[in-house]
Length: 470
Image (cartoon, rainbow, N blue to C red; front, side, top):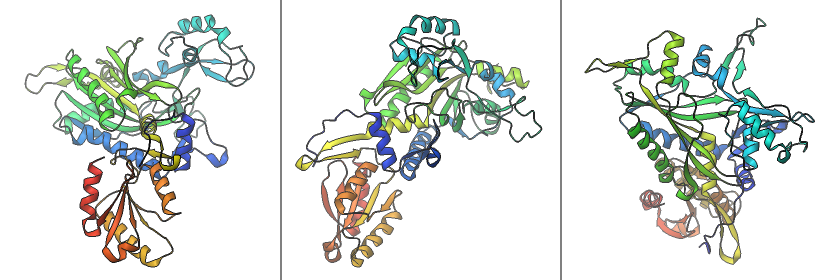
């Protein structure tokens, strides 16, 4: 039994070390020295990531009647990004060290010294703040205090998309700076091919790419990401009540899925983009650097559909089927990077506990539906054929009923328990010599470390009950 639930302070280095040690996340192209802002999800990481996607998809598509799913193409006609404003307005404020040429994000460096800044502020305002605080700022690489003027740095990633004529980058195609544009492009298709009637939503999990100035904080800010987006279409000026409901529902979902309430808060945007009516972030208290944006919730008015109507020449108005009223719907958006979501759940589940004899263990207290492995089956000894045979039989039996069943015979039983604790496995099933005679196995509970004996014939029912009790 754990002796203490008091948590030592967890920092980001602890999370990164666990992610690598237990096969959750690897540095991208690691054997070549790695690439900044690029990460690969390992065997257990991809399972946690997929489970988060499934839970998010279930929340919006399977548990509701007013949402439709979508998976739009990564490449889009270049005028899409002109219409969305990305080719002119999708930028971060940049300054460059004149000594070593290191680029910094001006708003983030100002925030680091306690000066309120926002990437939506004008270059003039950011330059003024930068000049007023130059004596407190230094290059993170060489320590110099000599910087270039602040300028906007566009984050869209260009590609020639197979154009070998030589002018491909003069007329570029862009990788998506955000995934949601595919939803706007297909609004009319969804209305025409489904029973969708306003108000309704479209949900998508899609790739996005950003030429980030300074990728940082592990999975928090990367150059390649997946975004889980919803766009909820409402009648003009009927946005306020729906927006408040969506905002609270997203906050409550994180708590339902296991995030501790004290690690979440709301933050309203002070500087709105010109078309937005309102914008809030759900923030998470990330290890080492505190509260920062986890998910954005935005009231976008009619901007997106109006812009695409203007640039494409296709009318994206909606016509009420009963009254014939025609209008451009307003859009309420939620958007979360799956990497940030992954990092928040991994961090929140990370616990260090003191056990018997003042020993400590690291345990990921994930909800079973999120855990990469639900059940780990082990023979007490790997070199005893009779134990291996029965353990294999139990393992195959459980795989027919449950997803996420693993066979583990690596190391002694104590090391297996510690490894499965760090992976977040709720239950371990152990076959010992008594099992050969009485057909009973031991179930060990991750959080309490308690062990119970169960008949193999009762194993499925007992595991179902115990998983439901986490």
